[in-house]
Image (tube, rainbow, N blue to C red; front, top):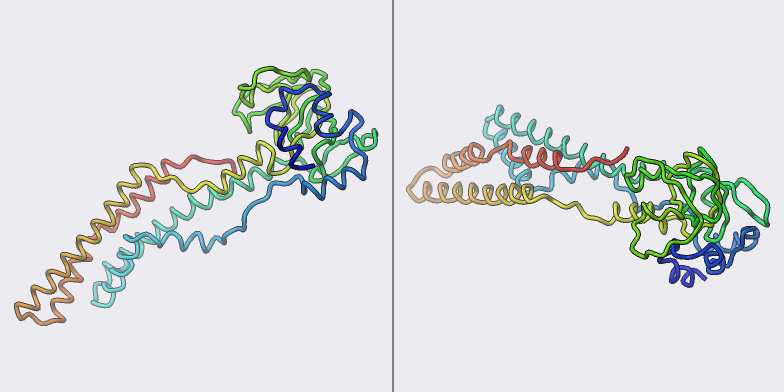
Length: 311
């Protein structure tokens, strides 16, 4: 049954109310409890699910994976060993601040999923066996008929079947600030964007006026807000061209500095200088040549270009 529904759910706004009920094998009286329980087992709960969470400590450790950061940490250790305590402290402070800034930015971005979850409705008024009943919203299934009125949070994606001056606030989904007036008649344009599909209600939006009924066409991660949640979890961080150039420059600079220090060390030993002295000279040169502030510049550029998310 699930595959049959999904194969036909591409454009619910093009379907008449009768066609929607026929496809979902439902009716204006809603589902009976037995059928609803069966579909709940098949479709799963009407919840936004997320991948296994990483601990804040893991986020913090990620800030030290950059090649330049690793070189700076090594430089700080060596500086301390050779007695350059002030240099070691300065490097440690800068690296720590860089890690703290990066951690805060990434941790705030990861809270987007929690923000989406807070938009979910806790309860819904549904018709079961033709009678209205309050149930937990997570128990909704495709085919359920839900009654919504002013002040309600829409609990699932629904096709409107009755509308009494029904208006919804869809700013959280579409960015449209004005309330959208809903209708129950079908549209005939397949290319209509989500914001113009006025016979649809979407999970997480708010009923700002009137009342109406809708038949559930998608729940959980199959809803429009569920698709956004999936993209948030699956999309890898995209770096800007500036970030890429700075990271590449940092790696090349670190490699070049280490190579020069190696040449200085080898040439000094070949000239007969004491090995320990040349080792300390090469290390001092590396500490002086590596720009400790570069990782902070890269992190700050990422912080500026990040798009803020609700939290």
